[in-house]
Length: 209
Figure 1 (spheres, one colour):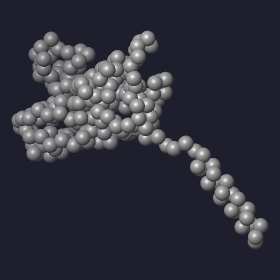
Figure 2 (figure 1 turned 60 degrees about the vertical axis):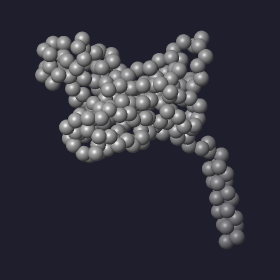
Figure 3 (figure 1 turned 90 degrees about the horizontal axis):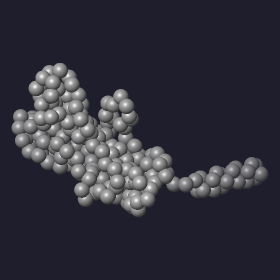
Figure 4 (figure 1 turned 45 degrees about the vertical axis):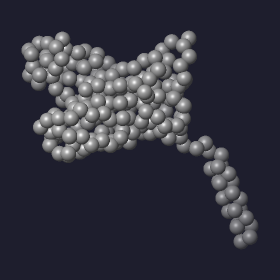
């Protein structure tokens, strides 16, 4: 019995030693704040990151879907953010003609007249109710631009408008995906050598009242 006890003790001690040698799990969390707004009001929602890894870029698609409340995403800004000086920024806000279904994008493929379809003059609406933004630290290796070091910081500010006829309620800001036949517009974070990093998106919310 004494030998059995000693053997078990050795195994347990070895197991604890191995567990202690494992590197700690790193956590990178992107999250949107909670905002309260009124019908007819334009407002901003700040998006933050709390990162254990060093970041050299990210791409974040966010749904703002609600069957009754149809918010309008006006724009995205990187001003004052941790990635403001990064070399590449991209924003996508899909638009669809309510008459013919023609697809536009507020930034990459805008209509000639804002909010109006070039083909039939139909109104352009945000049927997908998603906004995507992306940034890359370096596109020219000769430049010297610092990455986002571990910590907490602002990464973008999204501007919305609540239509005047918006009912009261809550719109959840959740992790999404932008439909695109050419590239993968999904959630992603990466480090300075291009490795994909573990990360998660913590939902935010907009309350209309």
